[in-house]
Image 1 (tube, helix red, strand yellow):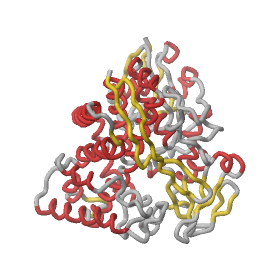
Image 2: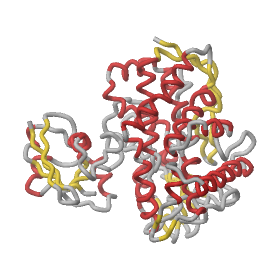
Image 3: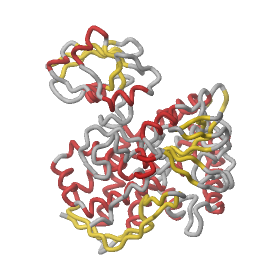
Image 4: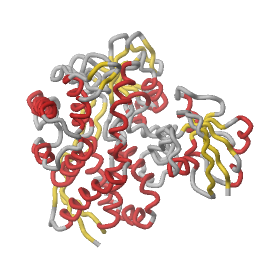
Length: 385
Length: 102
């Protein structure tokens, strides 16, 4: 059985070269593949900047479909700090037990529902729903808003036909504009209102800046969380003993979350733009060209991880960088970790086994490499105890 | 039973006692400011960085290569830096004093 396997297409290039190459809309990128190199480049924000033209550090580039700068993601220090310090406490709210209880209700409801069905399509019936409903907690918006987000489909930028869909992105941007206007007219306790009432670096947050934070929040946590959940279902379907292991040893749940996230690496890579001529792993990188920090490759680095291609649920030393590294590490990581933690706990409590009925893999085309990142669809049956 | 003392960046002195578990977990459970332990203790997030007071380094021993690689890129690193998720509570740690880096 290997439906749930996520292979490592970078191994040969990582060992032999340390770098790969990806073409992307006439703006190619040098892919950095080894963990230590990725960390060093992520740390070096002066040479490898995020504050380039909006959309350019994303691969595939969103320059053609987005002008709004995502915040704090596409801002570098020192300005970055003011924005990050503003949003950080809000994005740490998932550590609050009340937040966790609400998240547990959302997850319990979904698992209870899928257990009654003969078969479900995990991406649409479970992962997208769970991600969207959980997002209402993160934004502190009414639960009903999730219905609209669910109707958008799995990726706000990606459609069936092309990896970059400007029309679909506009749905999100128009929606966020509307919500910002609503929050201006009727301020509440949601993230929009909190941001609109805030000052950063001595200046009131503008509508455009608020929009930048909101786009990041919607886009960054959408298909990443969906893939993490769907891939977990596939993994547990093929490893019922792992469900049992977590059930019998609930104290390993946190380690299991980190290990699954390392193994899945739901975000394959993130770009940076070189501000000067530089060298990465003995490869020349010219000023104003892009590098990619390939988290997915780094997380299988055989010089760091023992048995990198195996899921070892209670892996003790796990210095993965699936949530990035350094200044720009994932703002949504606390929320994502809580979702995964409660999801694993709930599966261990309620689910005996899962049968895979049909699976269609989602393969990213990365130039030199093809990488499975999740599923376009995954049909399964959940079996209760 | 080991007594472990944290000094936060606000110079607050917090003395705790424990018999097992990681020093990071002890700090998180007791709300020590500056110790977040985001990754739960698998050496992935570097949010549990402490400086061991020099007179106590014999108690903690040395960091592993993986831990050192994490610390190397931290802004506030010193030769006394440790990620306290990698410090297991034991009698050997009794009396140790840790300055929280963040």
